Length: 110
Ligand SMILES: [Ca+2]
Ligand SMILES: [Ca+2]
Image: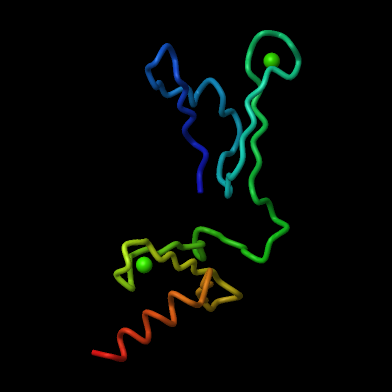
């Protein structure tokens, strides 16, 4: 996931302020941001966090983390499937097996 865009509300209009705020390699699994004037100089300071490297998920261009999503069981909500690599094999991580089991059961009935 990239944090290549920083959109700012400027007098009610959303503008792309990416070049103003992002001056670093921005690839990562960005998941949190705090905007606050921490040094009391009148401008907003951003603290941005990502998942980092202390996780079971490793990715690269050749072996990316991939998220597939669809309403597989037709219950009106999206069912995400995250796929990741261990060595050269892709595996899927099922966030909850319940919907997957419901889906398999529904397929078996056809
Ligand atoms: Ca500041
Ligand atoms: Ca669903």
